[in-house]
View (cartoon, rainbow over the protein chains, first blue to last red):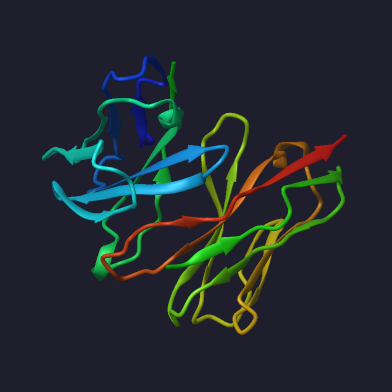
Length: 116
Length: 116
């Protein structure tokens, strides 16, 4: 089975631009979570999607948004980029999770975003 | 909110020796899961070991074992017979399972370097 894939792997943008990152979960997985990793703030939870619905959201400004498609693929969007948005963005997928079950989260290799 | 604290930013160990990483956490929950994740320089986050809070027996996975002290809210990881491939950043993480708050809360990480 293929693992979690994220595209692109590297991205360079300038302040004020917007960016879209993509995550394809493991086949059959319906939950997709996004995390931001920075040297200063560490790993922080952005949001989680299950069956095309945002089920949980972290403490990030509204510039950060996401969505999930019917095939469970997910995208996250950051508008009006700031220098502080430079980070490694990690996506993780699991079978379900949530109130009915625990399932292990499998991480993708991440997208390294640099904002100049 | 749950907080996870890793007080050792860096650890160095000789190949074949043993190293122990510390983690403490703060929660009012009684049922939760704790994890150790490994992130090598390739950036792929990999689950090392999981502990359910309701289980008194400490989890083990080959050369990796934990010392879970629920009352003290402590969760340390022991790596025995260290190998060069163990060089990575290690994150302690907390999750409240079976809830809509389905996310991992991570500590700041400990960089482990295994010396030949």
